Structure formats: C-alpha cells, structure tokens
Length: 196
Ligand SMILES: CC(C)(COP(=O)(O)OP(=O)(O)OC[C@H]1O[C@@H](n2cnc3c(N)ncnc32)[C@H](O)[C@@H]1OP(=O)(O)O)[C@@H](O)C(=O)NCCC(=O)NCCS
Image (tube, rainbow, N blue to C red; front, side, top):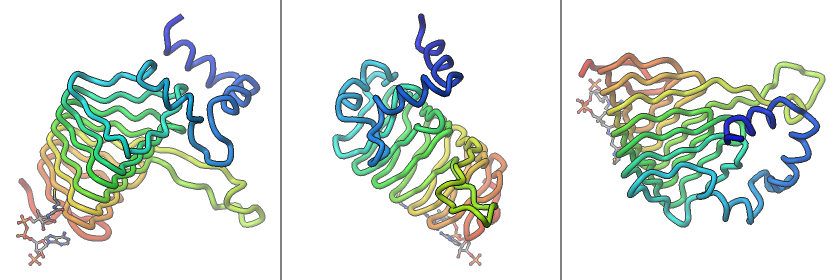
C-alpha cells in the first residue's frame, strides 16, 4: 500500500486518527515524539544535496506530506510544521534563519526567504463568544509562494495568500492579500509599491 493511501485512510477515520495521533505526537508539546523525528528521513522526500540544519525544529508527523527539493536549505532555528497541512518546498530554495512555516504551504523553486519570516496557513477560530478560543479549533487556507521570489526579513504571510512569481516582499511587510506576479509589495498591510 503506498504512503498516500495510508495517509488518506488515516485522515478519514476519526477513531484510528485519534489513536495514531497519540502514538505519533506528544500531546502536551504538540510535536512528534522523539522516535518519530528520528524516522522522518525514511517517510519524507528530501532532495539531492538538500540540507536541514540540526537546530531546525521539524514538526512533521508522517500523516501529512513534507518534501524538500534538490539543493534547498532549511536554516538554523527555523520551524516547519505540517501537522494540519502539507508543506512542499521546491528546488534551490532557502528557508531562512528563524523562519516559521505552518502548512498547508507550497513554496516553489529559487525562493529566498530572509530571516525571521512567518508563513502560516492556520487561523485559530474565535467567533463563538460562549466558548474559549482554544476550544474552537483551527481553520486552514493554503498559502502558495510561486517560483523566483525574495521575501525580506520579518515579513508575515497570512492564510490564503498566493504570491506570484518574480516578486519581492519588503522587510517587515504583512501580506494579507494575493500578490500578482512581478510585484514589489511593502508595508502593513502590504501594498504594491512597484512593478518589477
Ligand atoms: C524593498 C527593498 C528591497 C527596497 O526596494 P527598492 O526598489 O530599492 O525600493 P526603494 O528603496 O526605492 O523604496 C521605495 C519606497 O518603498 C519604501 N520602502 C522600502 N522598503 C520598505 C519596507 N521594508 N517597508 C515599507 N516601506 C518600504 C521606501 O520608503 C520608498 O517609499 P517612498 O517612495 O515613499 O520614499 C528593501 O527596502 C527591503 O525591504 N529589503 C529587504 C532587506 C532584507 O530583508 N534583507 C535580509 C537579507 S536576505
């Protein structure tokens, strides 16, 4: 049985999912248990000459996909989390120091992420005023970073955003909406300041 079929069965059956989640994830730390982290290279695609620095925090349980393309690098102190959605990274891409990526996120090839960036596809639900926020679950909307993009230090990319190819996000920007290809965006919320 291939890995995709196992993942789909897991995600369809709530009881089985709950049990396996307990086996795989430390329920207090909400990260994969140590033996699962050791096995990760066996169930994940890591491309030729790709590097994941030792201090990077890989919260990548096997029931979602994580893949890293050829010659791509995950820098020190970055955190990759695919617990609620796949994280797919292309070739020749650099996930910078102290970045946080929370799936579902697709990052293309030749993407350069500077330091301290957050790219998140996850929101906590909060609409019900009679329930605590941590009882209301989460929702996700995929983020797509196309090919050939540079994102400056400390930028934040929010759920549902697509950044078109050959674009630049200025340092400190908060990207709340889609960015068309060949754009330079800056500010909070990020606006187009230049066509490239
Ligand atoms: C966006 C950036 C690349 C500059 O691009 P540029 O085309 O040279 O833009 P300019 O410097 O001509 O600035 C154009 C306008 O955008 C504004 N601007 C530039 N960077 C900005 C930023 N990070 N946030 C908000 N506004 C910014 C400028 O003030 C200027 O506004 P004005 O026209 O009102 O004076 C640069 O400012 C930046 O953010 N670099 C990221 C650096 C980084 O993170 N390096 C980490 C190492 S990888």
